[in-house]
Length: 101
Image (tube, rainbow, N blue to C red):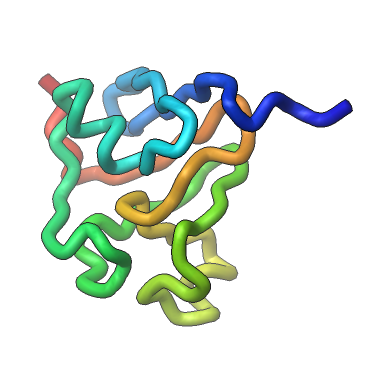
């Protein structure tokens, strides 16, 4: 039996190691902002690339078929958290410009 898709997941934002709970169906960006972690964002639909960051650990799935990333960027681990939801219990992203209060 696989993991419970409705189970709450955890997002860690580096640097600063901020830990954020992500509810089922919630994007990584929304969860971070709701927890007070200021990630850059603009369009929130996967096209502007303002929130682009690197996936350090874990697995994600996208809400849209092909977000605004080049195939090479995806292969290098870049993601768009505005349209990404966690697929693994823990997702770790790195964004040096993240505001870590």
